[in-house]
Length: 125
Image (cartoon, rainbow, N blue to C red):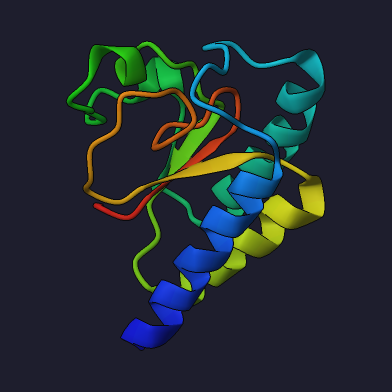
């Protein structure tokens, strides 16, 4: 199970890297990204009821760095296991929504653990 989980996370990182994101990315998303990610969040909200959170209504979400806290994401989803991570990735790939993985580490750059305008996959919760 752990190997599958880490394999899926590796795939997440590969897809994120391939999307061309870099540390200097803006804190606001393009309108193209927003539409794709709104669709992804709507699908995820129906699949993961109670575990999809939106920026304006997400008081329990904390990050250690102010730059990350200022990032505007479309939604945050909290998977419970590798199977759920797989389902989330399928939705994100299908909708072409960009994402970031928040897994307990530290980062100071937008899109590293909080996705600018995309979906944040929160493995801590």
